[in-house]
Length: 399
Image 1: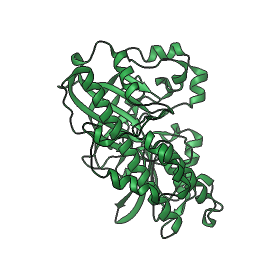
Image 2: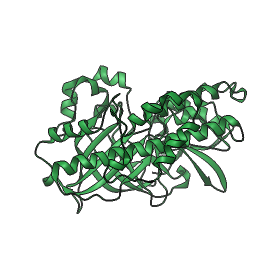
Image 3: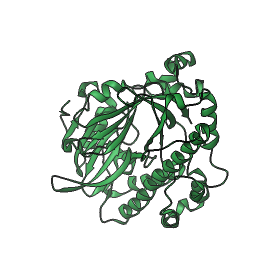
């Protein structure tokens, strides 16, 4: 579908869904963002919904400014996936055993590795840049210095909430039944700690007085506060990328141990909570993708649904009206609290039938019905991405 403008904003706000279907709180957030003097434009993805700091499913292009709360606390959160040489017939009969092996290899929830992962001991993991990456920890905001040990132990861990690890099968086409491995995670506690410190600083800056929403406080180019945030932001985004790379390599190892010989294609990795320096119409902007992936021409991306509805591997079309972006998933249609009040564990079991996963009260808030229809979300962004593969999960590990 073509975009629809959201009226009543200073900067253009382009919407890839029915504007009247956007919840009122989210619509007001979008209008507040569009009113900021630094905003060049906003693209709103079909998975849009109200979020803390800024609207989830929004792409915000700013001139010489960035809002740390718009980026959020899970800096660099995103997806990684890899296609294997396996087919469904190659998987072990006991998928519960495979799920247990994954959970034993990759800590979930608040858990961490007993000892930091040594990249040199992880088969298939990129070896370059690790020493420099950790050396830069000493340059971060001095208040996180005591957290280095925890950050090292949490590298290669999943976290909780909507983070997941999946074993999927490709649906339809000549590669139907091909096994994919997929995961969703970010910068863990260290990203949260860095984000919250900078968000607090931004709110106290004089130029942010009188904003329609204090969470939209920005840093301005050329200031020490902006320089400090960008330094920590780039590092946290790299932490998130490396965190997913470690987990994906560990996951490949679990599958290799379970089935024997297996080949892996080049992995796909994409952030969906991050900032990038980009240029549109000759204007240099800082693009914040808050629940959106980059979808430049030929860019491969991952758009997950929910723990019972499957996911999509996509290729970007480079639509500049959307700042070369696409949705990051289905998007929630109800809050976690509402989902828990509405659905039971029996509902969860029914909606995840055929998927080896947790079906207890602790993950009812992740029930598929709490999310929008991923098929409809994909139909609304056909001018943003083309589908490369449709995947259905058979194993899902939640935090």
